[in-house]
Length: 207
Image (cartoon, rainbow, N blue to C red; front, side, top):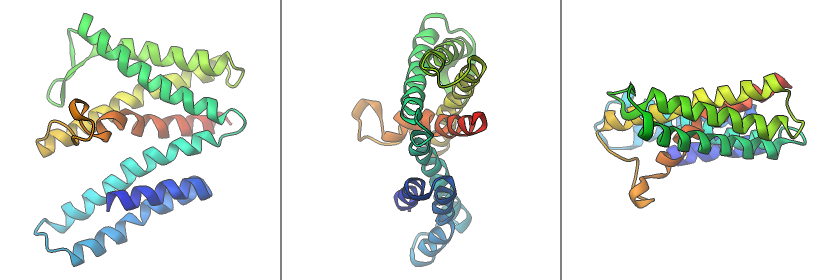
């Protein structure tokens, strides 16, 4: 159910923008209900349907935001690559900053490895990437590029923490094994699933 609804949201984004993307996500509710009716699982309907709708909205809208960013005007591709690079830079600098100087844990019960010091390093890297890529290329003003970087810097760690919370609730270390020691695909794109929509709506506000 997750994969079909995610595909419908992404296809909707390609065909008709944010309205169709949301329509694809909303299709998850009746589909989840039908799947529950024909399945023989004993899981509670609220849990089963709720998990399916959560996956469709979380992953579907998160991924659908990427082609939507790409299609924003003449600088859409630049904006998309900037978001990807900013998330990657923030994650990398947060990791090394936390390893070197981390003393104060950010969410000890949800993600013990994250520290406030690492978040500061990651935020600085994210904002710097957004500023250099988008202001220097004459796409956004200085305040706009800094605000976009700040939005990504806030949303990306929250996306990471959100997935960590779900994994802790399910009592698993990784979302999958497809990437070996790196876990599953969700472990690689969790920050992007929050950062993408945040960046998209920021860019819409600037327009």
